[in-house]
Image (cartoon, one colour):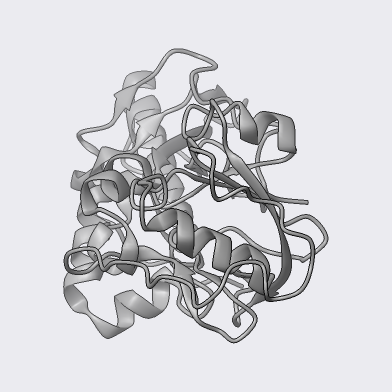
Length: 285
């Protein structure tokens, strides 16, 4: 049974209603429970909440208002609990970051005030109401939890094509982004996953990305197939495509690629900007 932290009802005053279907959650969530879900392809989290009329309510209007308020508070609680479990990287979750820094917890709880109403409330014969709220992950998870300092330069490779395995990337070409086919690795989505070579040396991660791009579009995008990944606005044109060989970390969010691909990416990073601009898509199972 999940512990539901209290969120004052006043935090929900800023809720803005969206047109029905603007954030349709059914059928598109990658991670789902009975009361919340995450659509990683669009980077949106949803919380479902239910509320009954308050005991003090006398008129039909009072019952409706109090039930809606209770439902929205319940949805916010569910969404906050969901956010706590979201991975920042292979070894860290949002919840762990909140425990380590009270400022993160305060910031996230404050951002819950920006929850959006999805569609119309559902009304039941006993007077109770059910609502669905939505928020983009980048709007409620502070970038400070996964981005820090100016971007570092990715180190050049010691050699290219000497690490074994087929070379999938032509270092003479100009690419518009990177697509990593992670199907079969068991990788799970995260806000700021890392990409490493077989020796554990990082090739891509928050330390190497411009803060401007990471904040505006996120560290990576996720897709369910290669075609949709390659057509994403993040990378479309001529993206390089490589295969991940392993998912790592306690959260199974970081990826390992072959040494050959790692060396090729390091070489490309010396003269191209798609990694620095977070133009990376990951294909999930």
